[in-house]
Image (cartoon, rainbow, N blue to C red; front, top):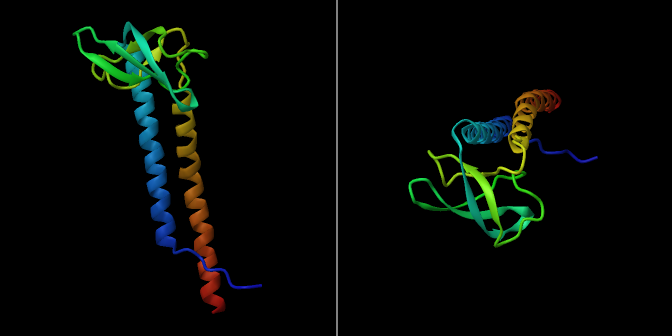
Length: 145
């Protein structure tokens, strides 16, 4: 059996911290957008301009102050079967109208935010555990060398 090269511990920990940090940032961003739509959202109607890959729905709408905005309906926040040309009721954040919006026909959900939170927790627990195991493997390797 050949000798397997172990990755450097510093590199493994650094990449783990970066990945966990990105998932944590996504979690905060997703929950913030969801709560902003719930707390200060403004209802209006939007024109569906495109239904892209993975069902992402692109819409255009006019804000209360007259600006035209092109944006996306959040993942899991649109009714199945929506097609280009449809008019849909949405809620948008007046502080960030270009952010993701929600189709008001869909109950409020936080699927993406919960997924990213789960990934953050998994990484926050898994990276230190795996780093500990890698450090042990490095120590064993040095002891037998």
